[in-house]
Image (tube, rainbow, N blue to C red; front, side, top):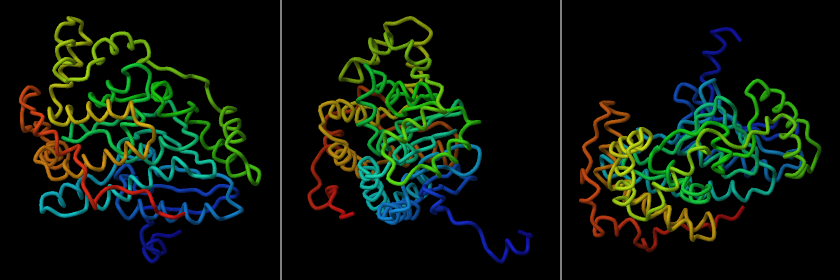
Length: 364
């Protein structure tokens, strides 16, 4: 296409959904923003699933990201920040629709494959890590860094993290540290490590699966491209992580780290000291409640209640300001210390919200 022809055609849409052979392909298409997801994109993913679910020629769903940097860096944080600044309702609307979509992906009838190559964070985790077949690579950098924004791991993150081995999920949820591909498999966020150089061949194979292919068929196909690696660096650290994070109060976790004189403990302590004290307390309680939960939906309902409180909070606006708006990396948290976070401050995050409760009643 010539430059003039491209100008006439206009820019590509932020989300591309089309059938390629037997695959219903959903491509997040904002490469300059590492495919950060907007409300409209969530709605378009949902609409694409409507079409692909009933199309007899679509045997498998494939989620991928445009560009070389990653599947998705998360939700459109700047838009949420701007709405929060003016007491708008974007958080209430976006998270409701996003969380319902997360639950839908987890139960989608046809095999759903996510290519989790490069950066995968926040909302990108919600679109991929609940799918049936989760493919990571040697380039994967997966994280849920929300506590650094005065928030907590949402999009069903508390469900996933609470089911990781030992206290691995608590560690990742509170520190926001990055998982590589094998770490993600070990932590239960992914299923197979496929070399990035083989993704194109795997993609081609997925477009040629037989009609009515089962999840078992797709799993066998993916395994033919996979390295077989099931654990990364974090697995070797589990004894220390379990000892530090096997507590139900942030003060006790901080104390365990302070008593350990190792370099790793002190680095971990420094990381926690940079996070929102209120965000960490809320996140830890959500993770502990998730352990006793029976379903992803139960966790999403709880996350939605807490998210609405976060959206109205100074910590969220301050965290986004420091990380995304001014980029000074110097948030001024309220309160600034763990010991100043009171039960009264935390209670509203867990209170029922009446007519605003998240309900999974969308007929599909």
